[in-house]
Image 1 (spheres, rainbow, N blue to C red):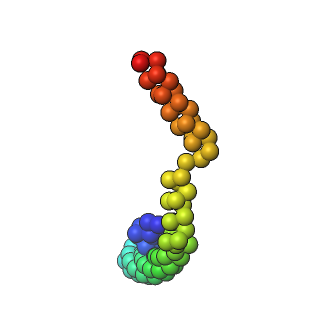
Image 2 (image 1 turned 60 degrees about the horizontal axis):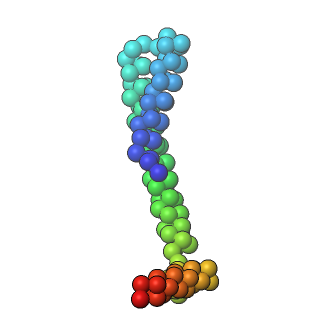
Image 3 (image 1 turned 30 degrees about the horizontal axis):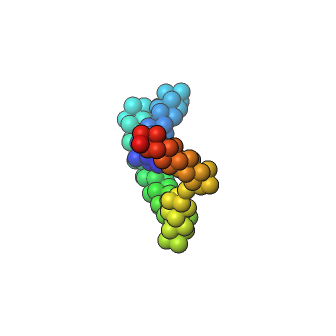
Length: 109
């Protein structure tokens, strides 16, 4: 999961809300600038913590999924053996093809 933009997006949303509230309240520009920087920094830190927690949890989940999905050696050997052995239909088709080849050789002689 791409969690890289989470801190920046969270800080920008918080800054936007702070901006709107400051204009509505008619706050002085210097006070607004201080609040804006403070809010953006605080929410950037919160977003970074959230990003770290999400990444840690997804790494653990990914490791568990890989372990669940990977077949054991015995199972993979069984699957390989099943793939190599022809089915009954395939065996009959091969026998018919062999008979056809034998018949054409007899016709030439």
